[in-house]
Image (tube, rainbow, N blue to C red; front, side):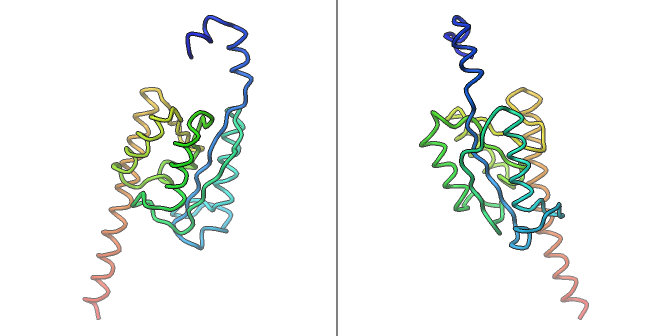
Length: 175
């Protein structure tokens, strides 16, 4: 809260009543997830993520004004077209964007380096990352949970890649 808001109760009330603006980022790893309605091992469909993000925005007094969707895109790299468009949009509209909402942290990044870079950009723009299904925020415990979830997402991705390689090796050696 700024000094002006603390000194002027009327301004504080106006700020509290002003709707917040949110950007929603949605991602699925496979094309098949794009239209499925429920959860899957890899995550939720685009419609399910969209609905969860809208509910989260509403619960915070925000409206989702812009949406970015990467369909069939791995989060192992931040080189995803819609993610990059979203980050550019946030930079260009930092004065009006309050939140970036994701369904889960792993929708944003599956490696800690990219997560740190994305968070640095959001922090520099004064935009808060919000997860529709995880309790991450700017408190020390919220930041700790974000770090843990980011590490788990990276582990999941690396472990899956290892298992796929091992499965391929065992199939070739059993023939």
